[in-house]
Image 1 (cartoon, rainbow, N blue to C red):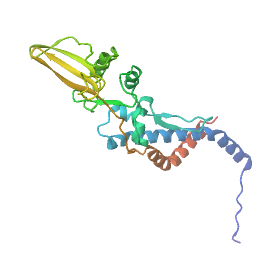
Image 2: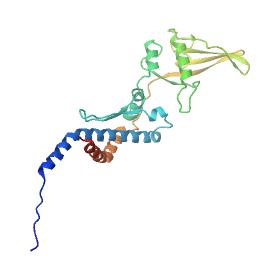
Image 3: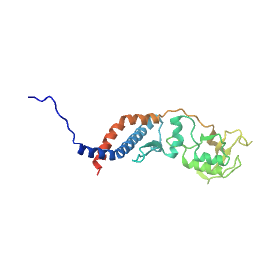
Image 4: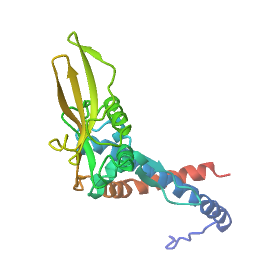
Length: 246
């Protein structure tokens, strides 16, 4: 006579051991999955940055970092490296950027108004990414930091030859409070002294902080990666955790 019912039994003793092992390894597996998902999000961000920003530097592309999850703290973070957050956060959240370290120093010496920041001027030497070359920036700031009185105070660099003629470069601070410089835009200017005369160019211009609109939805990118990757990462982590369990 054909059977109509089939009994399904469970070896409760062996299964109890498996579930016990699974329970012990679960926090380790979840920490692995969270950390891998955070790394996947970081990879996605690095891929998208050149599409959102115009010629970002390698430093900007690598400006995020991952804090891994642990069994004791089942949270993995994707965040900014400290210096990068100063200028990337306004691009994510909107608003103004934080002061640079050099801006804070100038404000501490009362050389830069508290409500202003600086941007490269027409005489600034820019690199391929549009950023001011560090050598010139250091030279200009070093020159004006040595003086607390605004005006044509500056340190002269060593003269150098230009087309066979000796030339001197000086940096000075222009301020509306100084009669000698009130016709110039406030900032750090460079004076070139030639045998037949001189010329000036702005190197750093003091300006009101810019306000940025949000254009980089980092939170949305991370959330998308979590939806796409977390399930697979958790499956893979569980297999690994069980495989390494004692």
